[in-house]
Every structure is written in structure tokens, then in C-alpha cells.
Amino acid sequence: MSGLAFEWEIPEILTRAEHLPSPPAVAAEILRLSRDEESSIADLAECISRDPALAAKMLKLANSSRFPMGREITTLERATRVLGLKTVKLMSLGFSLVGAVPVVLGFDYKRFWHRSLVRAVSSRALAELFSKRCGDEAFLCGLLSHFGKLVLARVLPDEYEALLEEYGGMPSIAIETSRLGFSSTDLCATLLKAWDMPELIYMAVGYANRTDELENNASEDIQNDLHDLVEIFSAATCVEELLCDATKAPALQELHQLAEDRLGVPTKDMDAFLVSLQDGISETAELLSVSLPEDLSHENMVEQARMQIFNVSLGTAMDLQNAGHEHEKVAATTMHSTDHLTRLPNRAAFDDFFHRQAQSRLNGKSPRALGLILIEVDGFKSFNDTHCHQAGDKVLRMLGSVLLREVRKGDLVARFGGEQFVLVAPHTNAFGLKTMAERLRKAIAAESIAFEGTTLSVTASFGAACIACFHQRTDADQLIKLAERFLHKAKENGRNRCEVFNKVQFPPCQGNPFSR
Image (tube, rainbow, N blue to C red; front, side):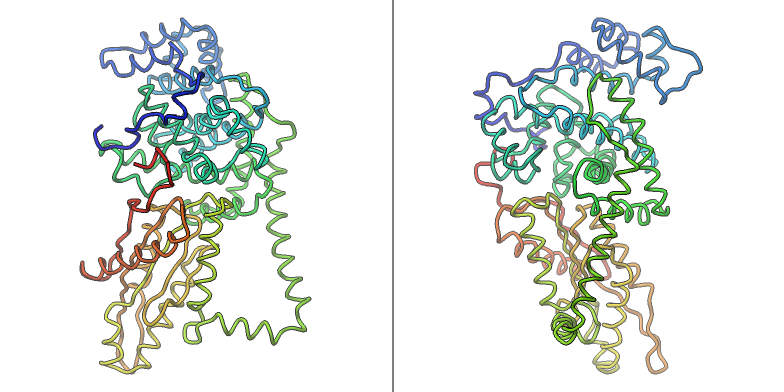
């Protein structure tokens, strides 16, 4: 494990705490058996049987709607055979750790469990939707995803209670990091590693919000599964925001985009998927004997999100109508922010949008990563020299048209200057950014331009960078410089290619023990 993530120790402020949790004895024994190649499912069943509460949960799971067997399963031995070795290991670990959740006076357990179960059940369902074979791992990671918040509320009651009161609920990862120097997911992942949980589990929990660090910090043998889990977690975060937050529209829009881009299904199918999660969440809550808030109709929540989207659109239309008498002012503003040749937003419009996105991350309003892609036409000078400037203009207009056609909702594509274009992706991670850049590169290469009896072929080089957490104002400029550096790398390596920055090199938060 040398050189991999989460090799640090628990921060000093936490080592002084009196109630830092330890794994239950049954969980420690399950982990030991999981590492023993000679252990059998019968050994696991015997271990689980020593904990009556855990044994009852495993029996309930075997009799749940996920494992329809036609007749009731009444013995733990048969339940373990029905569930299978991997499911027994992971679910018994999750259930035993959940049983050790510390009691914290004043903590909103209903909200905690609602978010945890939404993340767990949606992660498993999304794994199936994406045809990935890591549903049990996704469920366990989701179940433990907010465990660190509960630990912080217990071991740092004064500091974390102040955060809970100030932000009216569970503070974001960015807010925790800025105020404490580390986040609850950092703490959770570090505890899971200290408890000898599988690397795949603690890495997925710890890097769910820091995807740009993954490739250089995970063992090679778990890279593919880890990428799958992080992709699933990204979508599950949107599901959690939709079902648990007051502002639902952005999450539903992103899930609709996921349905179209990743799954190739209509948005109504995604809405039906979201509604279908309700039974699984309720069943899991009953299985774990935990209480959830009342009135959690998923159908109503999806409808609320639709209405929020509609109200935003209606408000925009009314604003335009009411501002009709100022059409000259609007036209002047539009002209000022639009590139006259490509009709894309210009550099000024990019600067405004990009720095607003960066600022929202600095002040904790947006916990999401921010991606940037710089695009440059390959050999642009030859179009002007060999043909004429009209040919060069036609190339730029074509490129602008392709980028505008292919860009996702919520992203901004603009002319950066000369033969360069820029794309800002507010809702992505390093893996998504790489996929997006490659898709755009292929779309441009597939186009051709008819000019004065000849056909012009056009390619472009891409440099992309993505960071998950902004610590200081200069990080925005650093992100642009990184994209420029990797654009130069793409050109040096033969052009018509994508080079993506995928390792964090920004200065860590001051005093952050989790940023070695």
C-alpha cells in the first residue's frame, strides 16, 4: 500500500477525542474471514450467528423482494446460500457497522438515515442500470457515505454543532474542509482503512468527491471497479440532492442528461426509475429498523423538480417579456458578449461565467468539481495560407457549430481567441471530462468543409483539466494554465488528440491533515 491514499494518521484534534468509534467485534471477525482464502460461507454464517441482531437482518434480507424465493427462508445457513458469498460479506459488514452507529444528542437521525439510504439504494440500482457488477459494493459505500458526519458530531460536538446550526442541516464537503481542515468523507475513509476494510470500499468513499486524484492513488487491480463506483456515486449524489434537498431542479436536469447521454433512454424513463426507488428505500429502512421522515413520496418530489424547472423557464420568459421595452439595451449586451464570427459567447462572456462558477465553489455554494477544456484547430494557419482567410473563417464557424451542437446543458462553450475555443463543465469529474473531450474530438474530425471545389478536413487538439475542490482565488487561473499546458502536450504528441490533467497539484487547504 506504500504511496497510496489514506496512509495518514487520524488528525491530532481527533486523537484527543474520547469517543472515536471502533469496529464491532463481529465486523472485525467478518473482515478476518474475508481475508482468509480457506474460509467458507459456513464460517461466515457461524460468525454472523453469534450476533442475533445481525443474524435477524441477514434473514430479513434473504426474504426481501431482492431475493424472491417463493417460500420463507428460516435458517441462517440457507440465507447465506441464497445471498451468495460476496453479498453476505459486504452486507453483513454494512449492517454490523450500522448497528454500531454512535448516539449523539440533538443529531437529526431521520435526515441522516434518509440521505444514507437514498445514496445506498440508488447506488445499487444505478449499478444495475449501468450494467456494472458492483451493486453490493455500491450499496455498502452509499450506506457508509455519511457515517463520517455522525462521527464528527460525536467527537467534535461543539465545532460540528456550530456547522449544523449555521448551515441548517448537513454541511457540504467543501464547507467542512474550509472550516475544519478536512471533511467527513476524509475521516470516514481513514477510519474504514484503519478498520481493515477492503481498499475498494474506503477508496470509493474517500475519493467520491476528488475523482481527479484517483488514478495516482489506487492499486492497479482495483482501478476499473473504482472508476465504476465513482461514476455510480456521481449519479447517486444527484439522486440524493433531488430526493433530499429543497432545490431539486439542477439534480433532475443532470439526471435527465445522464439518461440521454449515458443510457440512451428518454427522460420519462429516468423519472420512473427515481419513483421506483421508494419501495427499496422503505424496505431497507425497515430491515435496519431505522426511522425516516414522513411524506417522502418520490412521485411528488420528481413533480416538484419538474415544477421548479418550469418556473425557472417561465420566469425567464416573463423577464424577457417585461424587458421588451429595453430591447436595445439587451441587444447591445448580447452583442458585447457574442463573438461575431462564430456566434458563440466571446472571451468576456467566458470570463464572467467561469469566475462565477469558481466563486460558487470557493464560498461553498457548489460542492461539485469544475472542468475546463481548451480546444485548438490543428494547422489553422495553413487554411489561411493555402486557401484564404475566408476558408479559415469557415473552419472556425464549423467548429463553433459542432461544439454548440454537442455541448451538454449547463456547460458553456465560447471562443477563447484566434483558433482556440474553451468549454466550461460545471457538472463533471476527470473521467467524465475525458469522455466529453474525446466525443467532441471525434465529432469535429467527422466533419468536412466544401470550399471552392475542394474538401477541407479539420481536426483539433484538446487540453483538459478538472479539480474537485477550490481552496483559493488563484485556483481558477491555475485551472486555465493547466488546460493550456495539456493542450500544448496534445499538440506535441501529434495533434488530433486529447490530453487530460488527472492529478491534483494545487496547494492543499491550510492545516489540512488529509492533503499530503
